[in-house]
Length: 74
Image (cartoon, rainbow, N blue to C red; front, side, top):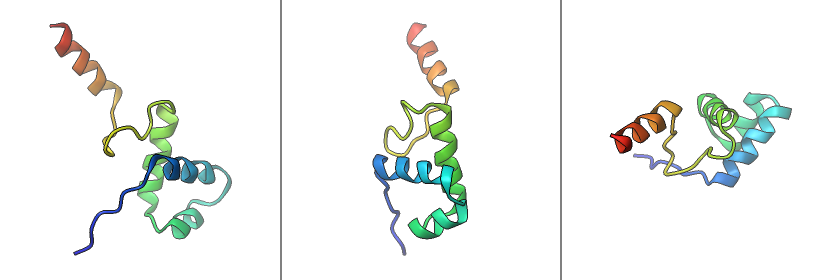
């Protein structure tokens, strides 16, 4: 069974930057990742560049943050 690969924040940001100037298929072939993953990283970076790729790979959505703050308030 194949173990899961982990990508660091710097590599993810580099891949997202390359997606802007090169075809998706070419970038994915070079880094051996699937197109779906590259598109997800790009979408996450576009939604919130300052907090993108934080945590252990968990994508924090605006609604999740809002719900967490609602729980804290009461």
